Length: 377
Ligand code: PMP
Image 1 (cartoon, helix red, strand yellow):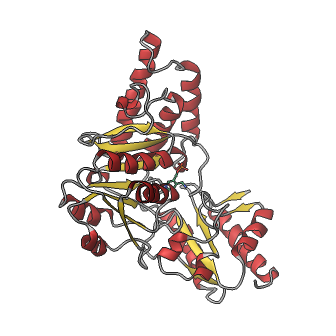
Image 2 (spheres, protein in one colour):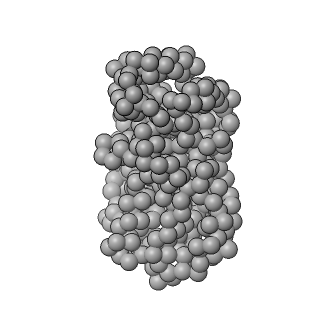
Image 3 (cartoon, rainbow, N blue to C red):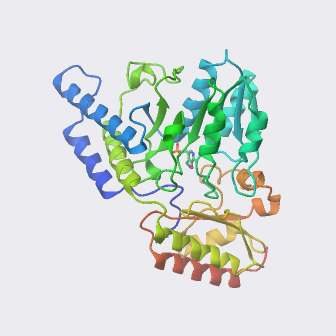
C-alpha cells in the first residue's frame, strides 16, 4: 500500500513501540499507589513530564497535563479557561478554520453559556491576519485560540505576531492547537500560554496527548476525580502511552526543519497541480508546511478519485478524517474564501519524515491515469 495520509495519523515509531512494550510489562504499577512499585511508576511519569516539557522548549515556564489526545486538550484549554476566568470577561477570539474540537467547544460556550465568540476568517495565506485580531481584541478578551498548522492546508498561523498582540492584554491567554505543527513547522512555544498536542501525529500511540500550560494559569477541571495530573484531570495515568509519547516527541523535536527531502515531495505535487491548470487548483498557500498539500478538482469529483486511488491501495484524504464521514464541505477552504464547489471537492496529501519519493511518483502516475479514465462529474 501507499499511505499518504499522515496528517490523519502515523504508525508508531519503532522506538516508541519498544518503550510501550517495556513499560507495559515491567512498569505496570499504578502511579497513584503508595507502595514502592507505584512510586517507581510515579517517578517515571514525572520524568516523562519533564522530558516532554524540555522537548517543547518550555521546561522553566510551563507544566503539563497528560490527556487522551488533542481533542481533550483543546476542550480543556478552552472550556476550563472560559469557566475559570469568566469574571474577567466573556470574549474569546479564534478563527473559522479550526479543528472541530475547537470550533465545537466554542459553539457550546457561545450557545449554552453566553460567551462572546469572535471568529476571524483565514486569508489567502490560509491563516488569519494579525491586524484583524488587533481590531477585535479588547479588555474583555480572556482567550485567543488558534491552530498552529492547519490540518487541511498546512497553512502556518502567525504565532509570534499573535503572541505579541495578546501579551498587551495581561488578562488574556493564548492557546495554540499544535497537533499538526509538531515536527512540521518551527514554532517558538515559549510565547504561547497553552499548547495542545496528540501523540499519534508524531509517531506515538493513539489515545494520548498533552496540554502544556504556563505555570501561573489555574484551571477548572473537566474530569473531576483523584489527585492525578496535579488534581486537574482525574483518572489513572496510562504510563506506557505517556512514556512512548515522550520518546516520540523527543525524537521528532530533534529532527531538523525545514526538511529538504519532504520539501522536494511537496514541490513535486505542487508542480503537478500547476501543470494541470484545467483540472486542478492548489489550495495550500505558498509558505505552508511541506508536510501537507491540498488541492481541488475543477472537473472531476474528488470522492470518486479518492475511491479509485483507494482501490489501487493508495490512501489520501478528502477533508479531515474527523469530518469526512459527515459534511464533505471543507470549512477551512470556505474560510479562505473558496466557493462551495471548490471547498467541497478537495484532496489532501500528507507526508511523514520517511515518505519515499517513489510513493509520490506512483500516486501521481495513478492520478494521471484515473483523471483520464474518469468522466467529468
Ligand atoms: N487538532 C488538529 C489540528 C487535528 O488535526 C486533530 C486530529 N485530526 C485534532 C486536533 C484532534 O486530535 P485527536 O483526534 O488525536 O484527539
